[in-house]
Amino acid sequence: MAEPPDDTRNTESRRAVLAGLGLLAFCIVLALLPLVWGSSSINKYFVAFGLLGSCVAISFIIHGAWDWWRGRRG
Image 1 (cartoon, rainbow, N blue to C red):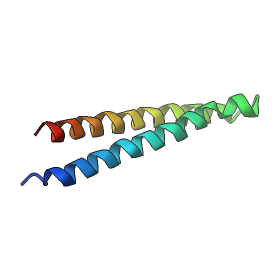
Image 2 (cartoon, rainbow, N blue to C red):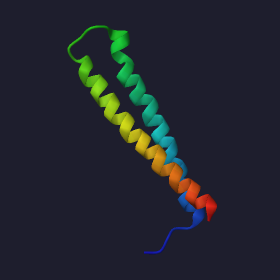
Image 3 (spheres, helix red, strand yellow):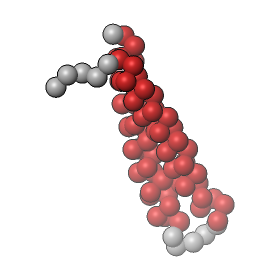
Image 4 (cartoon, rainbow, N blue to C red):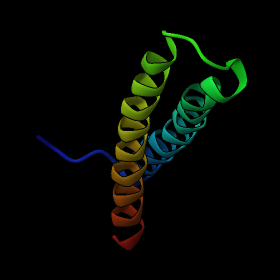
């Protein structure tokens, strides 16, 4: 399969990094909600989903940055 042009790869990589940053911000807020809401039995689920989402977001950021850097190097 042929490689996409560099400008398309850079656009997709940049989009992946931005999506990862947005997801990371959302998941950090989600994980910190129990500090605002206080004691509740559902808070552990917010923290768990926030942590898992943060791991996925960091993966988006790392892979997108890696592709972006690789595309710029040529």
